[in-house]
Image 1 (cartoon, one colour):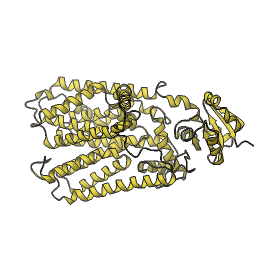
Image 2 (cartoon, rainbow, N blue to C red):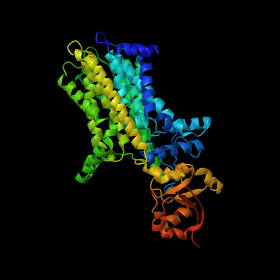
Image 3 (cartoon, rainbow, N blue to C red):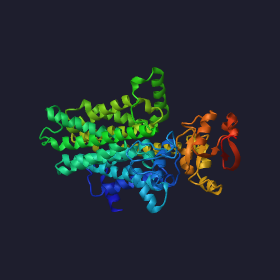
Image 4 (cartoon, rainbow, N blue to C red):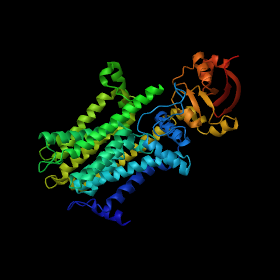
Length: 529
């Protein structure tokens, strides 16, 4: 209780800066766990993949499951959907986390909560590292804790931190990378810079979009080299240019090699199903652009941050530009480069924003630098801007934090609710179908057709059976069904009676109806005699 009491006594002090770095990590961790409780993490961690983007969740889990079963190795990832190559070989992000989780599964059993917990722990470590960055620069624990806590009230960050996608993990690695950069920047040893490159590389291998941080810092390096807009006017950051150039080349080489390998791998197996390129705005029609904007502003935007907070970020960014002479030049430069990266990303991946809210997670790095720049501006001019230390301002900040947490709680609930959880509502029969299939003699070696599933892997992963879904298979075409049977499909499952009624040709392949589990019908199939 001592750290909490010290915090409560000092946060509303206006006579001196409430700075207690010894206790602040405990305070922040307590806030994170408290918010996690309101977000219902203690229940969600036990959930099977469901909610918004269950599709991509099951893709990630399918890759992990195939590592666990031994069907795939690190450089030859596979999914449950056998695709066109009859092997299911496909790749996207560097499978480091998938492979590590599979090793934990081998040690402790195949529990999906292990995957969720690993992603969450990485996010927590990143937030604690970010706290140290804020505290070292601001010399104010209250506003440092507030800033990092506010990040955890981002709906997309909170939702995907306890999930299976790699976006929050890549973003977290970027934050840890910044921690090591500022350790180096503030007089630390050279190896801190190498650790920064390592974590930027890990983030970039998981999601290339997380390299916004690396690109921004490279801009700083180039400006310093050319003598333009130096980040530090007192001394050069990179006195030995090779200290930056060599690791940067190595980082870019690894990213290039992995992307090249993935493209060659998917081409070889004719089975790429993940986006590896860009979806730029200039390739879209006016109608498509409007449709994306409609989805963003009516479906997703409240999940980025609560709208008053988004306004706060905009006003804070404008304020740092207006009062640029009084702002910390190094942070002003970084936030400016981040803003350019933010806009560039939106232009390059505009088409993906319609249905993929998680693409925006890497853009949260701009909100981090906006807060860092803005609060540095206020606190370093605190004698003129004494408002920053007024009790009423801090109370307002706490209220804003609580309101944001409450909004995110509602947002997460909506994402798992019956209204939004469409795919779970359709496919609930697959969640515990595996023992039923075993009882029918349909073990994991049998190939199946999941005829009603329009996704890549949801039903196949949930039942832990390899085969084909409606995705990539035209179930309205008898020849396509016959082709899958020739490739080894012995069973057909469907969960929508309407699918069966619309596709009467399925009856030509069905030999026997074996049983029904919840809403899923299981049939034995074969080629017509």
